[in-house]
Length: 91
Image (tube, rainbow, N blue to C red):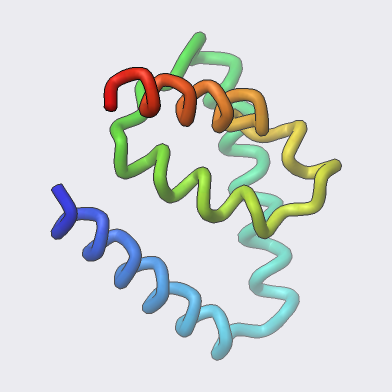
């Protein structure tokens, strides 16, 4: 399990390095496309099923967002707190 998380982190770091070489216009266009894709998917799926690695990545990256942006994600601060409470209960 830990190997998969390390792999996901490494893959994300490589993707971030790739972003450094792109223009701002290209990044903005991609953000708009991704936001529209998310809007379409939210209309079709009632509740996404996340694995533990997805939860770890969301919990780590959500900290980088502004408080206003955190409210509009599928993973809200309340969700992260609930995950933490569930983890503590299991341990």
